[in-house]
Length: 90
Image (cartoon, rainbow, N blue to C red; front, side, top):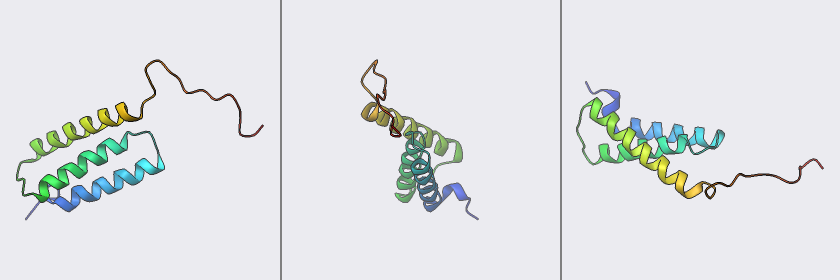
């Protein structure tokens, strides 16, 4: 009997669900987790056979790295705040 976390498609499905949540609730939070889950799915597809603690560690590290990269790419320059000078209803 195989457990769910050892199946590559379960991690792929998790990545897809997290990407959909990111579309519904934008903020680049869930996208980092989705990239981490997709990375674990790719590793599982390449026959990575590890236990659950190491698998969760790989997921956490990949998610953190993805989030830091996304933050560096999409963040405003240091010290800037996004402000709006006009309202759409005016």
